[in-house]
Figure 1 (tube, rainbow, N blue to C red):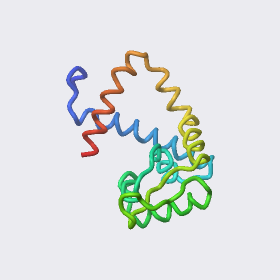
Figure 2: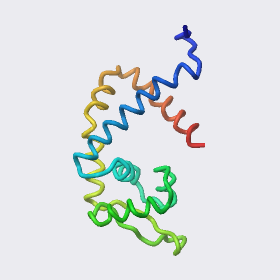
Figure 3: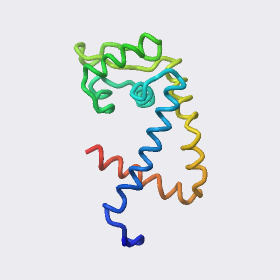
Amino acid sequence: MSDTTHPSPADLVEPLARTVRAYHDELAEVAQRHGLTTAQARALIALDQPLSMRALADHLVCDASNATGLIARMEARGLVRRETAPHDRRSKVVTPTAPGRELAHRLRSDMHRLHTALTALTPAERAALLPLLDRLGDLLER
């Protein structure tokens, strides 16, 4: 039996996986309601600032050619635009359009189960959780 006051990394894996699965499942449902794939929703949410195609592909954990097709479909819907990068004319930067930014906001706000669960945490629990999630994210992005 694990020690809840000193959990091992192995003790944390399944609770973290449940959280990630719940987030992904809800994002997939919300994306579908807005006529997007989960990857398109993830891309739109990631574009809170312009990103290079390479950075976006890295964020989505996909091949650059997959990101290009995904962005082309989103561009056809008027959600994003591709422009030549100012620092490298061979590179493209993806920027959300006003409708794309609005849809990204709606995607986030429509995740009711997530918001309800986070609201159920006490303010102290949320304050404790935020730096831990930030640190874990930083460690995983290395």
